[in-house]
Each structure stands twice: as C-alpha cells, then as structure tokens.
Image (cartoon, rainbow, N blue to C red; front, side, top):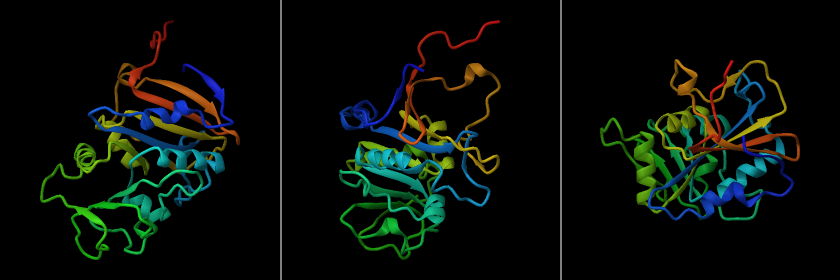
Length: 242
C-alpha cells in the first residue's frame, strides 16, 4: 500500500483515471462495498446500508466520472437501483444491464425515461421500452462474456465503464482481466455471515494472487476505500521471508 490518507474532500486522484482517459482501449473500473469480514450482504440479501452515506457518495461520483455503468440482473432484482448521480453534481451515465433471460421487471427504475441512454444485453426481446437498445447473443457462446460486453460498449462510444455489481459480475470481469481499476470500500461492520465479496478462480500458490498497487483513504464515517490498480503490481518485494 503506497499511501493512507483521510478523505474529507474527494481527491481528484481517485477519479482522474476515468476523467483523463484518452487511450484507444476502454478503461474499466469496478466498485465493491463490503464489511470488514468480506460480506456484501446478509444471508437474506440485505446490503443497501453496509457502506453508509460516504460510500454511497463515492459510488455516485464514480458514476459521474464514466460513460456507462454496468450491473447484472441479480442486482436489479435485489435492489432495483436507479444508477443515477442524484447525490452529486454531474451527468448520469448510460445504464447497462446484463440480463440474458430478460428477468428484469419492465418497470424497474433503471428503465426510467430521464434522458439517459439504456442498454440491455439479453436474448429476450419481449417487453423492453422502444428507447432501450437490446444487444442479443445471436447464439454465440461468448456474446455475454466480459470481453464482448466491453467491446460492444466501446463500439457505441462508451470508453470509460464502471462495473458496479453484483459481486459475481465483478468477479467475472476480473477473472477475464477486463478490469483496470478496482475500488473496494470496507465498512466498519462485522456481519459474521452472509454473502461473500469477490469469488475468483481458485489458486494454489500465493504467488498466483493478485497484488495490485493500492492507495487507501479513510472516508468521513470510518469506511476505508482501497483504490487498486490491477494493471500495476505493488511496489517492493511482495514475498515474505522467514
């Protein structure tokens, strides 16, 4: 970890990678909020208040910093998010849902007609509002893969992309090496049980673990935000010695 700081005002360093991105390849950031013991929800799926107001403000600033925000349909069904920037200044991004079977309610909040572009990756063509762009699989086994989704969004002019949830969706994108930056917000709460956060492919050796370069920030209400650069290894020797 390079730095540990108190975050009273949002530092530009957290959002510059998205705001300044001009490269030919899309820039993808993922955000995950969890408890100290690595839980993202209770066993019954309650998760909305784990990270408090400061964590929610940070999430909305992330949304305002990107072209598109992506969630899986499980998040839509569980939380019915608006995916807007209503807590901060800034435009709301394009809302993107991964919903192969079309499970999302056709009256879900993400479908609200508020001037934002809406895209759904789904093989189910029935019932979507006319203004919603549907991208189907056309029978391809890779049509709902992270690489396909990122490429399809980039082709539509979305070059900075936030993968917001849920944990299984974020894990798939990390396993596919399609995430450049990862923000993990740790709340000072211990659930003791519930749904775990990241679940990546198993490894046998610690040398196979991801060791990103990271900065940590203490938010106003005691949450700790880790800003992890998945494209840059941690500085110094990463291997412990006896």
